[in-house]
Image (cartoon, rainbow, N blue to C red; front, side, top):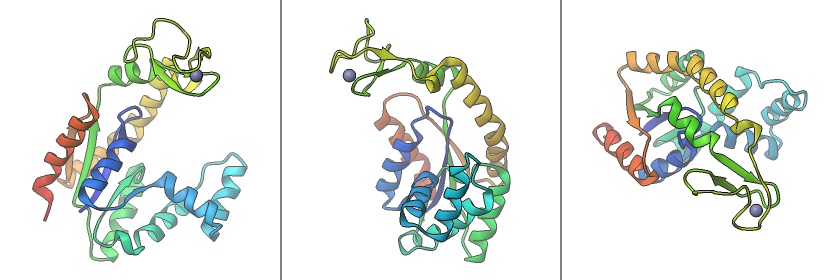
Length: 216
Ligand SMILES: [Zn+2]
């Protein structure tokens, strides 16, 4: 099974990617992991990527694509994979399609985790971080009545990333980039949406049910 997972920030994509990949016995391939592996392994692509990151620049598409190509060529990815964080836009999706075509392969399925914007804001903007131990609490889900860490007594604060306006901005950026990507895969007839609200295990279950018809 060759699978791509897409979903907004706060959808629990990383967690679901892990569970789904492990259920299907395929490697979870995230761009973050690929970057770290190349940089820490000191590969030519890693050095190139690092030179951009050190300057505070975005790593160009070609570098990311070359890393993805290398990773998909590895032995464990030959019988399938779950991609998380790639493709990020339509032009990357077109490159991925060509890459797979070269190998006489194609994606089987693109799974979209669907969460309403307001639910994402509720999840992320309710997070509070402990200034001492770094633990994360949730004002609503952990029923926090005070601004102190239950583990160490440290003062809790809201990270800038978790502020509502930042979350809403990240959602806008996501929509801009990903809406066309979702349309692209819908046109190819391989897009399936999964309701990503509720307990983590239920979301995984729903995802597996959505995948089942596509398993060879
Ligand atoms: Zn603490």
